[in-house]
Image 1: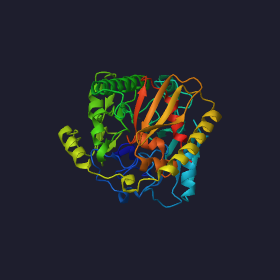
Image 2: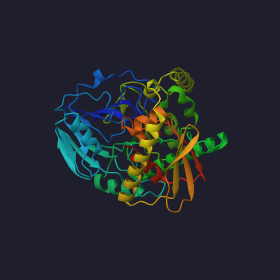
Image 3: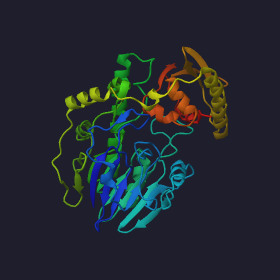
Image 4: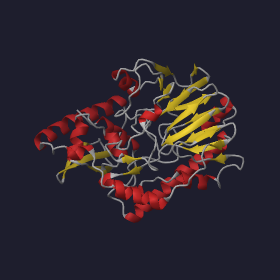
Length: 415
């Protein structure tokens, strides 16, 4: 097999008989309410990825399924995980796609020369206790002449890797996420610059150590640092400094000292095609130029987010709808059966508006958001989770204890 890398979690698998499987197409900048940009910038366009035989969509997040520009023939075969939270399936069906190849957790589908096995989320959260946790991700094992595992954002546990190793025996390539896309620590106003810097470094060390432990269990021939590759543009570009992310070059350098000598860590750039049989790419790899990256971030810092073009909402109606959204969120929390210990408030014109209060609160989270984006979230034109991932929401948390289900619950805050 061959794999052509495009950017982030997007690329094309080439089978031995020429079948082309496109995975997770995000091409155009500006996902997550306008803030996510590719770095390095892409040369590939949507026109370049039309001539494919099959698409795999791992989940509904916009850096994997950019519904703004997702435009293929409606009968294109699309591989999706058939799980109880079928947000992606419903979205595709509403758009008129008629050839969804739904695969249950752990089941295998044959498509021409490919054997494709999908996996539901391996863990609710790899680092924290969570009642809700990860609901939407998937991972794919694709077999032809070689065996490749593409984890996307579905980072496995060590136990899951042992099971995969026992089942598939040998992996020729493991594509593993190395970054954590989220608001912490860059969006937390309760942290000093020094605390943000320390948290940024701790998150990177945590993720890379976990990644190294997984690689040493899977013992693939090669590893590709994959997914979670982006920079923030627009007026929030200053948050890049504390994102808790690094380049794939830095990831490779770290892993060289942490994984077994027989395992090769490779890096690819847009339009690089790696041949798994020969172990070579069609292009010599060009390392990331950090100075150029900083210049690029400065250039895109002038980009305008879509909600910046909106009119500011009428406050009385906004307050009315916040109450409705609060009730909806609390109802979903109760239906799911999770118990939160954090009170949640939103800053509205410098006044804290309480939107959730547990029976016995032990901490408080105040959310700061542009009221135009809040209006979009209430009306389901945007989504709280996407706004968080895009760094559009700031927080003040006291004490600074992370309760994952608080941020999961806020996904239900809408009318």
